[in-house]
Length: 252
Image 1 (cartoon, one colour):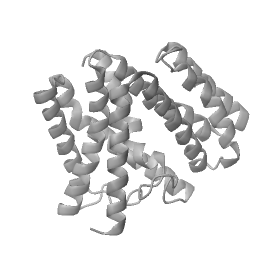
Image 2: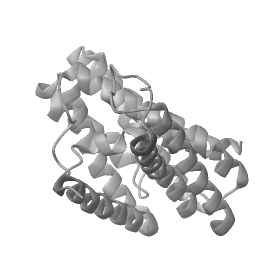
Image 3: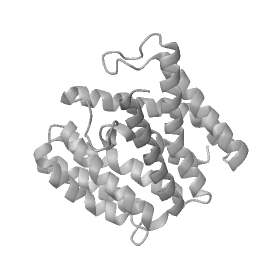
C-alpha cells in the first residue's frame, strides 16, 4: 500500500466516523456540521467558478438560509427554499456570475435534503442510507475499475472512470441497500432504488470533474489530506442526496 493510499484511507475512515457520529447525534450537532460544510463548499465553488474575489460575499450570503435551517429556526422548509433562491438572485445580480450564483442551489439542496431526512421517522437510517450509498458506490467503482478496467465512460472529463467501475458502483450500492433492508428495516423500494442513485452519484462526480477541468485545477481544495477539497468528497452526495430525499418524500 502506497503512502498516498494510506493517507487517503486514514482520512476516509476519519470522515466516515465524524459523519456517522453527527448523524447519530442529529439535531443541532448535525446542523452545525452541515453549516460548516456548506460554507466550505460555497468557498470552493467560488474557486471553481473563477470568482475567488467574491468568495466572502457568497459565504456571508449563504449564512442566512443556513441559519434558518437550524432546528431552533425554520428547519428544512419552504421558507428556507425561498431563502436559498434569494441568495441565488443576490449573487446573480451582485456579481453577474451565474455559475457562482448557482452555488447557492448546488450547496443548499443536499444540505437541506440531509437535514430533512434526519427529521423523518426512522431518520437516522434514512440519512445513513442516503450518505452511505454514495460511499458504497465509490468503493464498488474503485475496486471494479481497478480489477476489470476496460472502456472509459467519458475520458475527456474523467479519464480514470470506466464502465466496469460504473457497474461496480451500482452493485456496491445495491448490496448496501439489500443489507440495510435485511438487517435495518430500510424499505424495499429504497433498497431497490440504490443502483439508480449510484448512477446519479457518479453523474455528480463527472459534473465536478468537468468543473475542475473548466477551472484548470486538479482538486477543488486542499483541506482533506489525500482527498483534496470538501467538494471532491461530496460531489456524489450533492446529486444523490436530494433525489434520495425526493424518493422518501414521495414514498416511491
